Length: 156
Image 1 (cartoon, rainbow, N blue to C red):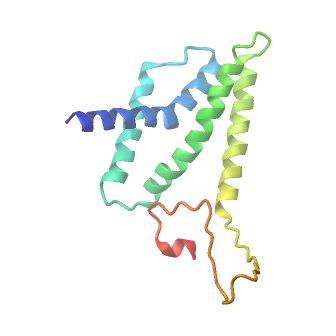
Image 2 (cartoon, rainbow, N blue to C red):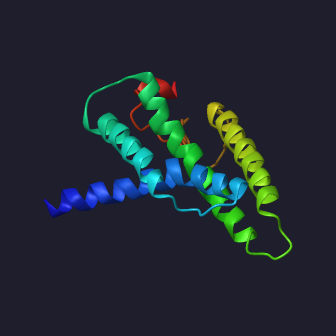
Image 3 (cartoon, rainbow, N blue to C red):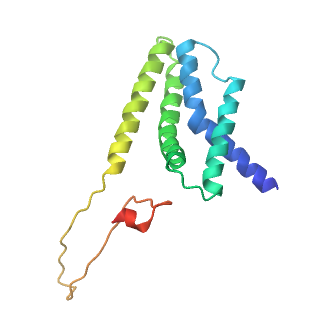
């Protein structure tokens, strides 16, 4: 019971941090109000429900899968950019609204760049020769591949 509650609490913090906090914090910088708003916990509960629904059940809805996976990736990027933007607002000569605009632009650029680079798989053929090996040997080196829930055909 304690493990389940702890796990759900950690998932809630992650859902809030990756999916909700960056938007709420940037909206606060644009509007000039407090960063933490109690109403922002409601979307985090909805996100928690959707993430838990996807991982616990065998639902294979493509929209839900895209929301979970792409949301985590874009949320991670936007969380870092937002935290850096909040740190930049501590500087005396920086306008909050300008920082928020730069943060939104940086988040969009980094997310698009990540999507483009993540969709390209590079295959290189290298020829290695050695006098110590008499037979022909074929080696495969796979780097930075995270199969996750994809089928093995995804790598072909």
